[in-house]
Length: 137
Image 1 (tube, rainbow, N blue to C red):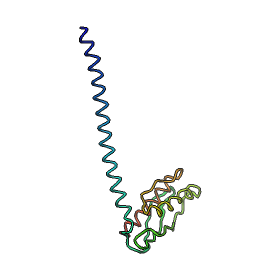
Image 2 (tube, rainbow, N blue to C red):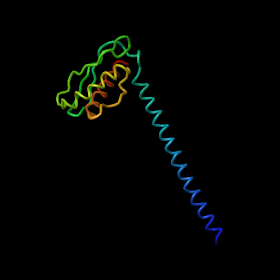
Image 3 (spheres, rainbow, N blue to C red):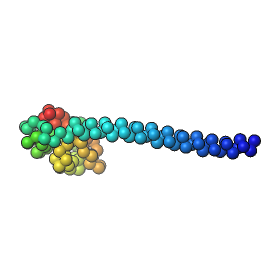
Image 4 (cartoon, rainbow, N blue to C red):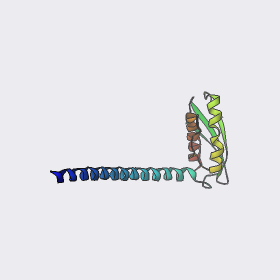
């Protein structure tokens, strides 16, 4: 009976260890798959130097409705991004969201983080730029 108690604690600890290792392994697999998907999206959206020169329009759903942008490609790279329409956007949030435009031009991709406090407006701008860049491909 004493030996059974001794083994009971050992088995419980072993079971806990196996569960912890299993959870870590599952998390690692999920993180790896997610990183591969993000890398694929980044590769699709980066395309620095691979876009056709010209000016392209795209739209995306913002906080207050459709946001329309104009993206100018020069020498295969993003040269300029202009907001053409954002009728119902709240100006305080939208002005904060427009800060991501400089980041997009610097990084030459629409795959950027949203502006804190202006998530929906930022997502609208990002989607609009992504749609414009699809036309430029």
